[in-house]
Image 1 (cartoon, rainbow, N blue to C red):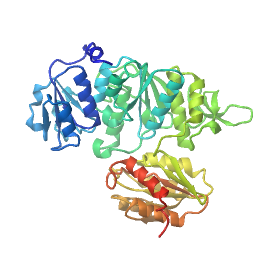
Image 2: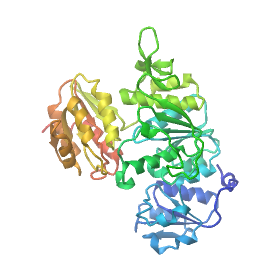
Image 3: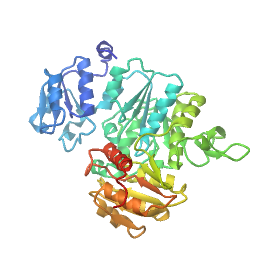
Image 4: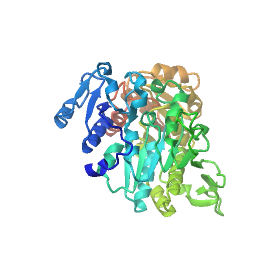
Length: 470
């Protein structure tokens, strides 16, 4: 989309200056987008010296830049306040101005003119988003994929002007400022405790994610998790009631006539992914392993089907897709022991899915590595599946003591200080047939810049043989 193209779409834009808050990836994408439109804006960040501030000054030398508390600004003078997803409205003092606040995704929705697939969930949204994008490409569509994954949504609008379809992964932070998204297909994959330090409680977290359904034509939801189903929009904070979207459900059980699920549809009773009684492909042909990845495949198939993409393209992609880095990837297999990097498992729900998905497939036992910043989560749900599948739970990081308290009565638990120490302990007790699983159920920010660095550290330790017990 060129500057001329973007300028044509002014019907919903407010008149007057904008304030953009947040100098992170999304904030810079907002600045780039508004600059392409030739619009005047003020840039602000609540930090005194945010990363990237000098690069911003050089690129946008004519833009007024405010650093520090927003209380020093006359917020009433701005027609609209555009916030990055990382900005907590309450902490930033923006709640009194909520009627003027929009997010990056609201701007995207205002100017997007192509069909939109929007995908959220506590877990697996990156995998499903990538799968849907790959299926669209396989079907010959010009597709742009991003959002909370890869390129920022507004960068996609500028850089992919000929896109026939947008597929966005959206977080609760991106969705909480949405009033009307208007997706062609909105998918809510699952819900488990996460980001409670930001949202306060599970209901507030759920409602933030449920905003993905505002104005949606179709909804794809988890039949086994009623918290993902669209409810009364007026009750959930969307303003006036809107027509309910057409609903498609997926399940890892046998499906109802219009659901996607797993059932024996062939004469040999082999398990298939299917829609009702129509078989898509045998489960055995999936490259992704584990029950949780079967759910991901079904969600992607359901979304692709809603969007009119051919089953042949769905089959080909599901048969070859190996998964994403740091999301259940097998990093090494030594002496009959598999080492799996699921560093993206940053909440309890993601880790439960990994434990359940892998535990039933092992000839040996699971050795679980977990810990970090728990974000206020309740770790007790991990105790039961670990008691069934784990040889030992090895915990490290800031909230390790909380994990010990939650697990020690049900599963042998060892506390260490670092990931490397955890891996050395795992190597010393692992037996052939076992699996060492890094799926921490926590954020990484106590010891690592992000989950990517944590996963790469896991890989490097294995590549250098540093996990060998000393």
